[in-house]
Length: 580
Image (spheres, rainbow, N blue to C red):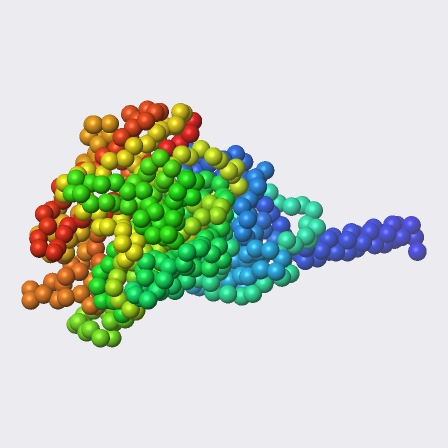
């Protein structure tokens, strides 16, 4: 074999070797996972939110993870906040949402791409980060979604889960023209080390509804105050003379319940809601109800009237010569703080199957939910909470009540001590059945109370609740009456409590009387309340109130007595302020 042939063979062997090596590298590249990281910023009305990427999309071999690092940056997160993961699985054509509350509480739900909203593709184009993008549109629960996507990147993904079925990589999403998610970079991982952040444990598979419910339940702090407690009239019932810190107690022949509860001490970024559920257990009438808190940071409290009788409460004598016990603040006494004023409907649940009205499907119970966050300074630590429904029925009513604390931010905030609050009056005769007189004083007098504003208190306002009563044609329940608030002899506020929407609550009032003209008694407008409704407080700003002693007066032109029927007004007021 000559030298020329040997050289040719060596050259052929070298080429073959190179081809084998290149083929091996190609095979390895074909099997190695393709990885990329896409960073997105958020914009609202054209302005960028936060610093750095707000959303990161991590793509690996046909799956993408949506991550929101902005929620984790140097922040202490609140208890119960789940670690969530959203995975877009383009191989299985589904989205997986996973939540981990703790090591023992992991759950997820799945959504097929085919279940998502229909997408409309257009011929509009735009260039983003050097990629040619097409525009797709969709409508999500009346929200217009515009999506720009590219099929040139060789990967799939979106920062916005509802658009997971758009082909290619989404580089821009605009919702309703004012909220935008915009990609700022697409970085491919050249190392292709195969690291897969997908978890091995997905936890329990649940429905999307159950998933969201579990997320919320982990965040919300709930305190059950009363659970299906009966409020009825029992003439043989004797009120306890000694308070029991461990159980629910009944007072005033059974029409009042009281319990000591321990409430959480949470930062100001928690919203506090009171939930009340009520149903009839025999009483057919609409009744005044209240959930109240008893302040105990004074020499004498409303608790003394509950255990020892209303004669133990401070009283004043009005112009009509009657004594009114425990209704206003005095030196050494603070009245109850009314959390929720509500009104039972006519016989809900108990009379549902006893009264039939065409077109009406009766509610199972009356449900009331009210934001009471403004009273947060009282709603912490150990407190006495009571509930009252005036009635003279052996079966009476059942009531359940909870306090729920909702965070309005995932970030932990410091506790503050910036609030000043003081209950001034509560004319609602909560111990009615125990002898506390009806608040009929306004016919001949005003309700006058003195109080002192401490130094360095600002943003002062009065939280005021007012409802008029007197259930006949000429009574104040059915006649508009102006309420006036006077401070130091000057008129500070004037308004007329009146509800015209009572017919909305018809399906909660099976035992309401039906009139010849097609209306029902529960439909009629009333002075600040309806059967089956709660009464919202009115917040009266008092910006000119300086530190020092002041006098507040409530004046209402109460209607005249007719025979044995009297009008009266249930008013309560708490003054609120912030410390400088």
